[in-house]
Image (cartoon, rainbow, N blue to C red; front, side, top):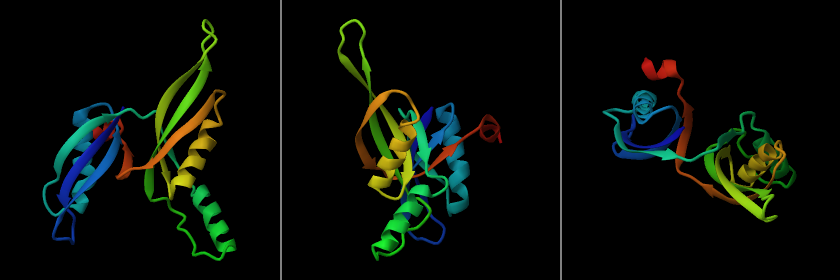
Length: 164
C-alpha cells in the first residue's frame, strides 16, 4: 500500500520551514509516520511535523534506475546543439493508463484505469518509461494522462525498518 505523506520541517541551513511530499510503500499509517520521521530527521534542524498522511491508489512505481531515458535525451540534445541533460531523474510523474478489455457477454469494450508513479526528467520521458513498462504485458492500453507531482521521493519500507 502506498501512502502520501505531507511533511513540514526546517531544513538544515535554511531559516524558513519547507513543506514537502513523500511516498512510502508500507503496510500502515503508523509505519508511514515512523518512516517519514526517520527519513527526514537527518535533514531537519527541529522536529518533523506530519501535516497529512493519505493512501494513494498506485498500481506500480516505475523508476528510471539506470538513467536510460535521460541518456537518450542527453544524446539527442547534444546532437541538436542544446545543453546536456542530467542523467539522474529528478521529478515524479503520475501516469494514468486505461487497460482495454472486451466483455464477453455484451461484446463491448471495457476500460479499467490504473495510476503509476514514474521517475523521469520530463513529461515525455515519463510517458516513454510508462509505455516501455506497460508494453511488457499482454493487454491493450492507452496512456490517458501524465502529470507532474510535488513528490520529492518514494521509499519502500520493509518490516525490519519499520521496527528499528
